[in-house]
Figure 1 (tube, rainbow, N blue to C red):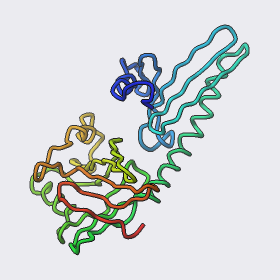
Figure 2 (spheres, one colour):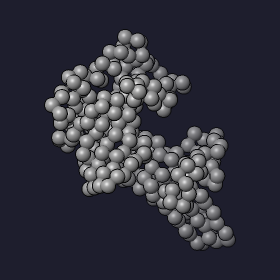
Figure 3 (cartoon, rainbow, N blue to C red):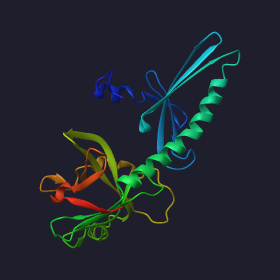
Length: 252
């Protein structure tokens, strides 16, 4: 995506400049930005960047979907220029759910499974893929201690709520050296503070991005994880960096 522009310029370019009265539509420069969901009506949020144009009987529409690193170009000719909108709707409605399913299938095949210590320690982490975003941390143990249970106990004792899930999200930060690639992931805790209450305007879960590096151990954030891949794209191991440990994949 950033072969023609510096990555920082590209990221700044793909941002809205103003919101509109519609929750699902913002304006960029030069974009018309629509927000949908990965299954159109349900799932995670997907940003669709578009730029329309036309002259005379010719109409065009450029569509960028950064989450999937794809672009779509639609060119039409004729007296009814609105046909480009129908074509775009048909393509996007079909394509986004298919791409999301393909991405989840690939993540389940490559990343999900059980990872354990190769040094004899009683340490492991189990990852899976569900209908939600990211990778679900099913269990996480270090030297025999259940870290998810420990985190839950801390929240309960401090009236901090209840952990509904812990998920790993890709950061798109990668480092390739020789035949190996290291990719950074961040853990995010989905915390419920008011079970059974009505939806909140000031939902604290939407501020999870503010909590990165909030809790550290030995000057390293506990939410900092790194996957290492071999030259074929297979996972070699995962590193919970704060624990200074390396967990090798033993079962998919």
